[in-house]
Amino acid sequence: MIRPIGLSLVLAGLCASLVCVAGCGGGGAGGAGVSGQAFSLEAANDPRNDKAQEAVLASLAKAPPGAVPDVAIAVTGTQELMGIDLATGKTWSFTHAIDTRPRLAGPIVVGQGAGEVFALDAKTGAAKWSTKKVRGKLVGAGADGDVAALTTKAEDGSHLYVIGAGGSVVGERVTDVELAAPGVAGGTVVVPWKAQFVTAFDARSGDQLAIFSIRNETTRILPIGGELYAGQGRLLRLDAALPKAQPADLIGPPKDLPSVVRRELYVAPQQMDPIKATAIDKTFLAGRPTAGGATFEQGKLYGAYYRLLFGLDATSAKPAWVVTNKADFIAAAATRDGVVTIDESGNVLLVAASNGAVTKTLSFGKPAMAADVEVDGFTVGKGDAPQLTQQIGEAVSLRSADLATAQLFLTQALASIEDEDATLVLLDLADDPRAAPVLRDEARAQLATRKNGAAKMMKRLQRHASFLYDTSAPPVGPIATALALQGKSEAVPLLLSHLLDPATPTKDLVPTALAIATLAQPSDVPMMKRFIEMYRGSAQGSPAISDAIGALANGLLRLGDAKDTAWVGEVATDATSDGDVRTTLGKLLEDRKAAEAKAGDKPKGEAKPKDEAKKAKKKAADDDDGPVPPGYKARAKKKS
Image (cartoon, rainbow, N blue to C red; front, side, top):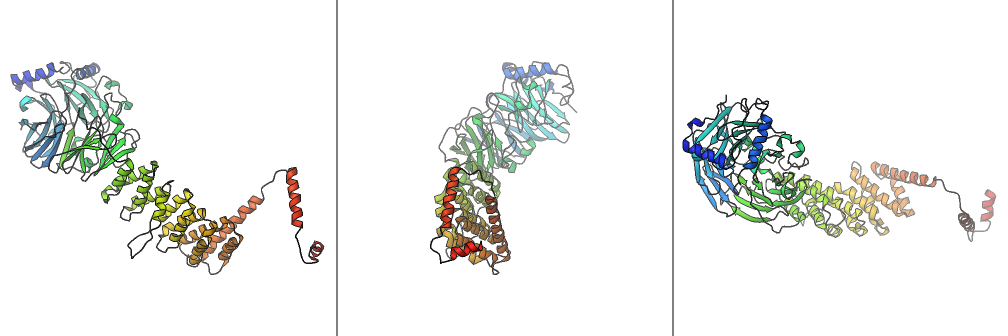
């Protein structure tokens, strides 16, 4: 059922006020409209809809939405709403029963409780109006000047209300179609429905002006920078290009956003129902379209994961900075040069886009159950902040299980940072027994690939596990692999000391042995043999030990000493060696022989004259065996 907006009930003075709002500010589409049932595709099929769309968009261009005030609001109690003027830091409070989360709607705050809907001046908190004629639960609100539009959900369907100055209901429509959060510009009310259509109405006459099909999920009409945008996960500007807009014209985040932030810039209105902020609020994503609407201001998006706030590259989604907070973030709005955030402690943080510097902190003075913020011309300014590596180091050092997903994302981001500070963060994280296992594992994997930080790694190797001193072994395996990658042969004695230490974790044995085999010098051979001797008879059932023995034996063969090679062969055939060790070493020796045989079978090129001379000289030298017992050569020749 649809009831047209009834202006017959409006007082003459109120009508005059609305006429001025529409006429003096540019007005709606001036009485033009389309036929068909509201919130249906009948209007879209009206032959006049194309022209009607052009008229509405032209009207919006002439009468854009006014600038929104730079304010933040917070629910600080079930009967208390507070606001703060971001420019001055002044706060206000308003006492009223609160049944649904209040909404910022341009110049006003709209709340609901105790059977009525009320509106406050967003900057001062002064009461604007209240009405008990609005039915249903508040879904969304938009306002511009003295005109406000509300959508509600009631038992008989969705309602659209147009509210004039003083709070009089000047129009109402009810429909079975689900309505979302409306917007108002000049004298035009714009309402999204079915998440993909938008209908424009004349606030003064109630005429249905035009219907638009938005190629994007649309549950909000937002005033940003003096223009209206439609969308939710992505935004589309309501301008002359709208009828021919393509998916490429949508302003949205990259597809490869990290899983730690929300996928959408805004959420459907019903997700904001709870009075107390939920996980959806604490994992927000925010961004401000540039004036041209092609991308985001400063090339940045801002995402939260509980206590962590990220500055993300709007194209690659890589972190540019991270702010670690004491309380969970619950709301944010992007400015032209940064982002304004609100946390559960009631603090309002102004954060610079360039480096994540907190340029200023304001406060409600009370914890916030839920919050909202909107900005227009406001700027946060500049400030100093630590480098990204240090910021990540602080974030990943937090001991909180609910942050592990975000910390993993930050740890993975260190892979592209090649400085030694990043290596130290990875070293500390891999070496922290209190860190979440998934973080330690990621840090270990990355640490093994580092090409710097050798001095810090070797210093860490000086520590061993000790019950008496309450110390644990460092991440020996990844350190060993990294040192081998860097060619640090001076680290071999330190690595051998850990290899021979029974407290060294089993998972570190093989990478440590491999690194030793790569870096070892002849002087390291005795200690390598010592490990093999210690464990060759007790490696049965422990692949890590037998593989470590195989790695060390390969190192011995690499050093090329014939005695050591023979020694490896003896261990491989000794009955007191475990079967696993004999198998490992036997295969190693077989592979070595096969490789030598293959090298000896390689075809040789045609000998050059100089090569022939060298061979002849060498043969003569070989024939001259020096002093031998009498008759030795004669017997040899006779035998041949």
